[in-house]
Length: 69
Image (cartoon, rainbow, N blue to C red):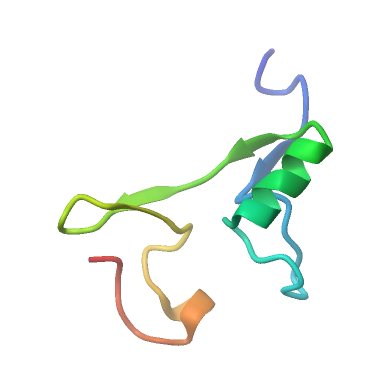
C-alpha cells in the first residue's frame, strides 16, 4: 500500500539528543533528503494560527505548563 511503500518520518527526522528538534524545517529537510514521507501534527491557536506541535501541552518541549491557545 502507499502507506507502507516508504518510511514515514513522524515529526520529521529528529533525534533524542536534541541536535535536530522535532517538527522543525531542519527535521523535515533531513527526512526529505532521505526520501522519507513526513507526517506532523497541527493544532490551531484560538486566533486560528496553525501551530505544528505533537503534544497537547507544552511541558515536554518547553518545560512550561500550558497548552497551545
